[in-house]
Amino acid sequence: MTTGIIIQARLNSSRFPRKVMQPINGKKLIDIVVDECKRDLNLRGTLEQIFERIVVNNYSMTVQIIEDNPVPVGQDESKAVYFDRRITPDSEINFEYGARLDTQYLYDKIRMLADPYPNAYVKLNDKIIRFKDAKLVNGVISGRYEIK
View 1: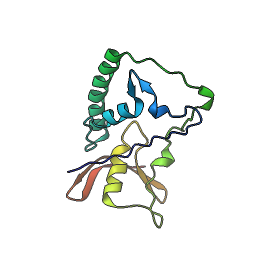
View 2: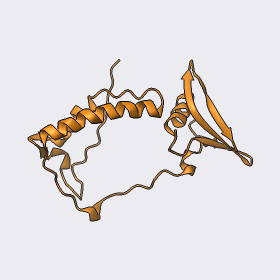
View 3: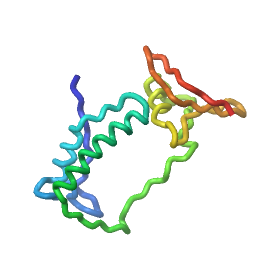
């Protein structure tokens, strides 16, 4: 199987133009990003299993950073972009017309919204059904649910 990846790398950032072309210890930032993308990180399984694999990758990256001893580059904090923390309404599975409801999408939404994130849920009249511990086998999603 061949896997492809798209790396968004803008050259015209107002905060730090051509950032991806800047050298860090003699290597362009974009080349470092490409090399890191080649690290094995399988996204199958539960969120916890994915995080466990990330820890292994982060350890080896940390060792490499310590060995390379890169020089930090300051940024203008007044131009930083911040994102809001995920909140419970973001985890609702929406059954409105046109909403994406294929099995793979639902499975991914449920498994990626594991604790400590607000779990995936649906509203049914005055009840809320939360989904946890999703598994996908032969096109069928199974797992646990809580009704409140």
